[in-house]
Amino acid sequence: MADNRIYNTYQPIGPILSPTQSTTATKTDSGAKTANGSSFTQLLQQEISGVKFSQHALQRLNSRKIQLDSTQLDKLGQAVEKAAEKGAKESLILMNDSLAFVVSVKNKTVITAMDGAAIKDSVFTNIDSAVII
Image 1 (tube, rainbow, N blue to C red):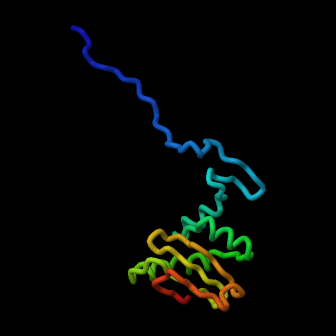
Image 2: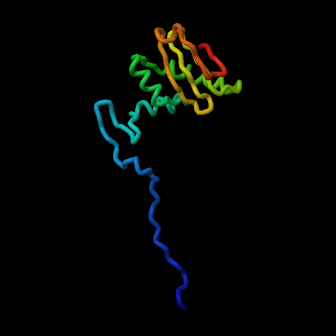
Image 3: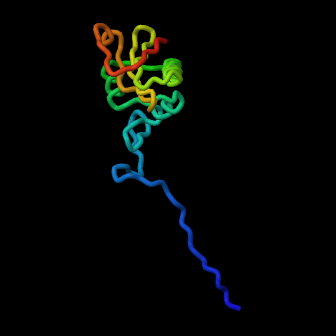
């Protein structure tokens, strides 16, 4: 009797990478970098807090020398959740009268960040809510 079964060789499926991504991570003084240039610690903090930072917001944080600790990131995440519960789309989050963030609530992404000096005499546009924490 002949063996009529078909035997296929299977190969494991790897992650699909876009042409701009590389398969190797680069190593710098600040730690391992991902394909988009974010360090592992930044990505970990974003996953923990649930809030992402846009490239513009990261530039503002660096240029204004704003450092956020884990408790501030937690408060920011909670403020975004409160805004989402109320149906907000773009929200201004004021933290301790010294930090302000404009956040896309739908994407949970910080669009821009300001410190106390930049907040004064500022006009915030294109927001539909404000959360003060």
